[in-house]
Image (cartoon, rainbow, N blue to C red):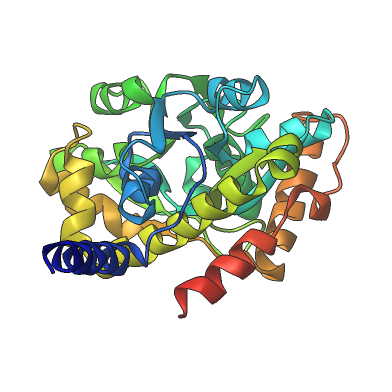
Length: 320
């Protein structure tokens, strides 16, 4: 009788445990995922909530998308975040990268001195603008100038300044404007020395696209179950953070940006996971601009850069 009761209690414990874990993905083996410590690239830090075991995933923070891509290609990462400029450049060189889901849109802004008389991008003629060459923000700046009839070669002076130093350069009058990613535009607003001139526009050029999650062809071939589990966790994390801004900002504040500044920045950040035909067409437009600016020597097969089967399956799983 005692033996029967013990077995019964054991069965109840196992059933209860499985019930608690039923919404978590079984990753199969330990995974390593790379991302940045920013509010717009935060989803991987929540993957563990949707992965079955406590030691099945390691999130590795980076500060440079090029370093992250190199780690992925070397096999040190199974999946990582990337800017679309980095992904397109890699694909144009024949590197075996594959985009599996979205990460964030928007996240950038063109900032001018708060006391300047600049009212539109057309007013930037004759001005000094801080930028970082070869980045999404560089391409967005060129797009903004192009759409306003401003020649970046002759009408403005582009000055290479690191993102971390752009705010100080603007505040001191070294430059008249800068194009950067969050949180630096919002910091300029919060500190009172800058104001937003414009945000990326989804109706023009390549629009608001920014960053995605990618893996490699080898990972898909050899660790498909793992990649699927990671993408499903990404979808669930994105949906949860979009519903719970407090959860999102509390975690983002741990990365070093003040909560008040984040309250401004999040209105310019769109966490997302789904990729559709409009998005892929925007990536094609971005690749064309990169070729025009000699950032790549040829346009890769953009559609071949994407494997949407993972988000298709993740969407079905999360609907259950």
